[in-house]
Image 1 (cartoon, rainbow, N blue to C red):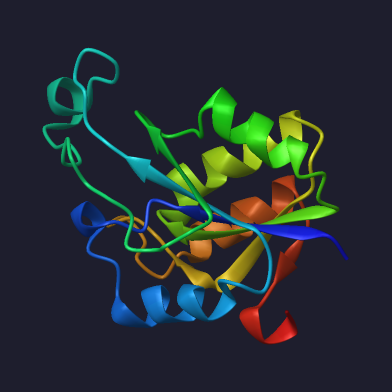
Image 2: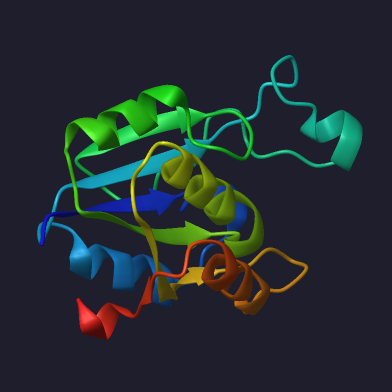
Length: 153
């Protein structure tokens, strides 16, 4: 099966647990990989004004993916989606930080682009609202249906 790994916002601002970073690194090299990094630019996304918090303006990915895309806000950029579509995968495996927000936003963008988003359930961490990620996993199952664990890959 042709698949691509999409890693969402595994960067210092979000304090990812070591097990998440190591688990994702084990998948690198087994398929094409893309990572996103969320950077703060208040003129583009009003994190500070609306939430009183923002990611760093200069964060970098903790994952050495084949391709890294910078984004401002929750969803992947159109360039990220275009790159993934050009790889023509049968499914896009998604993992990373904030299962019920940024990861879910990636799922919607992938779905709307005609791709098959598939969540790697044991390689995702929720926001401070639900660090377990279970809320995001449940929402993913409801909206997209496709879930796997890293052991199944």
